[in-house]
Length: 285
Image (cartoon, rainbow, N blue to C red; front, side, top):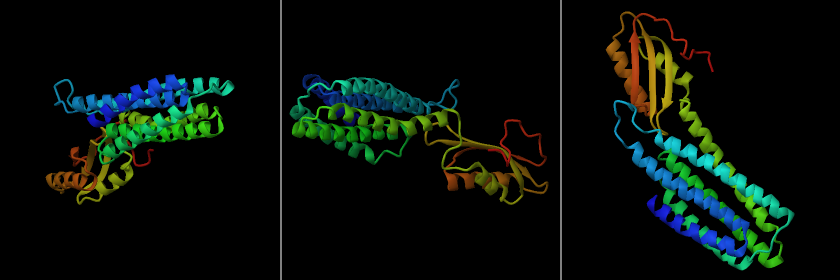
């Protein structure tokens, strides 16, 4: 990530200067997106360091959600950039200014090459956590944006159709919105302690109830601290003659091996206690 950060930060300056000198909104839009890349990766680096801090008496779960907050901040920042791009693009569609197409094309092509390099570096690690996925999505969307800049440069250079510049800017803005929506949605889902997308409460409940000696499972909750740290709590009603230690051992092993849930708190009961009004019942959504 340090390599990608350095490359993007350096070329950001080139695109801003190039956009101003060539009067290209598409280049400035791409520079805005690259600024978001630099910010995203910078936040990702800081959040990664913070997230590895040890838990404390005031932060007993640690700092794993620092990366989730960073992902949400990155996504919302992208939306602000898109708003500014769209406003300027509409103004230029009404009165498109001339653009130095040759220089714009050269800068856009160089930017595309650097974005492809950055995406290749992040590709292997994109599924590690939400933070790295955010950085990868930023760079991928920026790569597509650079394609738009190159295409607009070719059109203007060959046919003198200067409206291609703001149209390319609108295309880049739509790419930014598309790439950031999933990131924002997932960040909010984790912050609201939603069930991980790859797990089904009903399936997990059914499987726990199939453990020998278990009559029912209630007060089942599954949520995430960071993007890859699931936590589960549950109450299991056991038959009076059942071995509660064996049930606990089997349930813990099953959840760890099957779903990768290692942070498990299970209460095995031989009497059904009144269910909390916060519990998720079998028929609840």
